[in-house]
Length: 108
Image (cartoon, helix red, strand yellow):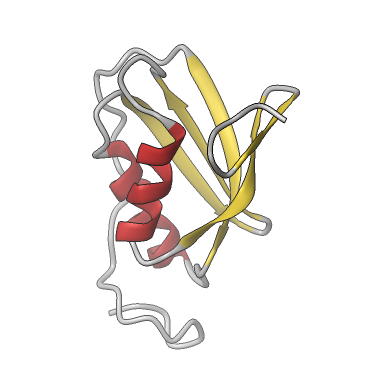
């Protein structure tokens, strides 16, 4: 099961394997609601299930997801929804390179 210190009941998960999607963009966003490596793996696995996502990596300190994806196949909203399905939340801002996006995916 999950990490007792975290309090999650997530079964131990292996990190996901990169899939065959061709990444043309990378985005980073804060992830709330993860407390252990199993929680982070759960979010990573949910993200790589999104069509167009080539790779996802989630760190705990700081709690940030870095996602390489094809924006022609996946939107920021698709990524947010995947994180939510994994039981976590995204912060209201995203960073893609030096650009800052609002939660609705619009450039600020």
